[in-house]
Image (tube, rainbow, N blue to C red; front, side):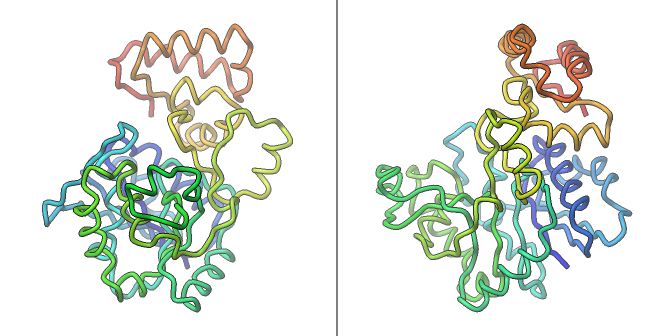
Length: 315
């Protein structure tokens, strides 16, 4: 059995659905999915693709900022929903002992059951609150470490194996709320900064294959390695696979396939229409469009997006 947590708002409904479906596809076990959402009603039509699947339970809860905590988003890449995961103990039942948190821009590629059991046991034995992948140390980002009053190492919070027993025993949610207030304007990467500032390296290290950053220059050899060995493919940064800039690459086919399987279409979001058209034209002229599995369908779907408003998307 795996308890799985997602936190997002309506801007990531599609992405979360694809992430969840990929997880179910590769893990033949009881899966309890918990979602903390800003506006749960907006996810209902997507949840229809999940509800009714054998051995899968889905529970969606609306986030409430009960203490009116200032949830700063200094980077346009982040939204308020990024903070929701630190309030998990307010939304997950006391009977849960461990949970796997995933960002919605992650695609699962392999069965995680053995790793989940092993990592949960290690966390319990070592009395650690979470396992995550290190992004860097102080010499890599001295200004960030100074602002966060850190000395050791900084992790990415997109994939976290969490020891809920330990989390509750130290009242971590309350401590992180205080940390957010303490850091104030020094926060650059939302709640990830608060988590890192509080723990400052006191976490279990995850192997890269458990939070593998998508390389948009990946060749066939690397793609084959990813398919066979990587558990979670994480589309970090601004080159998201649902944008023309990040979507027309071989590495994005893992994401596209999930959407094609459900809807028979590509998931495309065009916010900067003119720039996106230029990007697509360049990708066609330099033949990069053939890096995706169905280039003609992609072009057709993109043209349909152009008939809608700037923030339209294709389901």
